Image 1 (cartoon, rainbow, N blue to C red):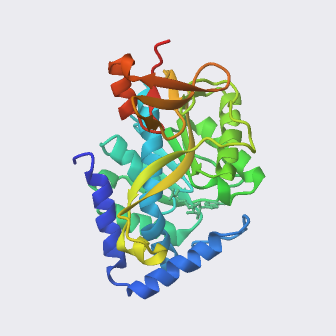
Image 2: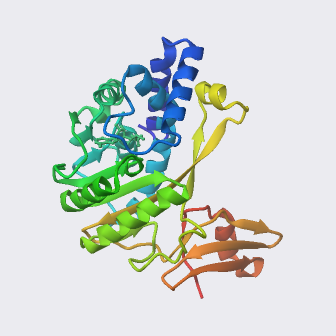
Image 3: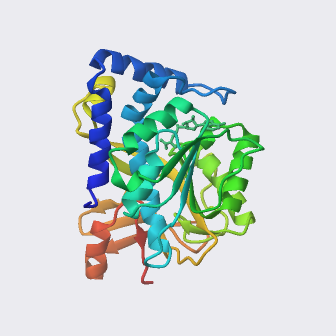
Length: 328
Ligand SMILES: C[S@@+](CC[C@H](N)C(=O)[O-])C[C@H]1O[C@@H](n2cnc3c(N)ncnc32)[C@H](O)[C@@H]1O
């Protein structure tokens, strides 16, 4: 497969899913789902109750969560020794398998995967979609409830993607502790909102306390320099919009930007970036302004001008979320 192929395979599988559903019905299912997610607090019962909920979730949200996880995994892959790849993966609260697809798009070989989720319809649909991807032939779709009794099988990589926000504080603590125990590496992704960032920050503290080292996005394991309540650490992944997106959200843009927060940590060797671009770079005439998280306390802004030569050209190419090497 070429690097672009998994996203296209997923898109085609999702389009096939909606083929039998009248567009109006699909749009209504998505609207119901959005209303359900909006303003809800963690409950004792799955939100994804039946096939139409799950098909709506998959068609509407999976391309975005897939791209967010893929970005987080790319940053993680840059921080671990070259050639490292997970020989096993567990996706906790994996639902229809977006993170499972993202892992197989990042390290393109087949591996044993276990997807844990309490919503049987989500697991069933995930299994159906994965049939389109030959790299996902070894996936076990297993019903499991996140809570104090959760037991995650040991694996090289544990992902927890867009799940913490659906849990009580106690269950969030349990799942992160169990992921830190079971995973050689742990990657947690949340929506790029102040609340999502706060959950990521808490998980980061817990992973460090459990003895893992931060691989990304942070250049260090020290406290986060961002002042809670004033700002939040988040990034952006570009997602092509499907016709369903355009129908529900209106507008004609062919893409949208998914904002996400994440933390990736490992028990193994790690070389985090020296600095990371934490805002969209501002390109001015003859200069680029880069807002950076570095190994020094606080965030800093580097101004790279034309007289910096190759560094200036690199700064013009730098994107929000990229690693950056400072020269001074
Ligand atoms: C927003 S979806 C994210 C799905 C997938 N990880 C992704 O990134 O697209 C949240 C998932 O967490 C699952 N979930 C929520 N609470 C759970 C719990 N207590 N036990 C197991 N799964 C849970 C839901 O069923 C759902 O599949």
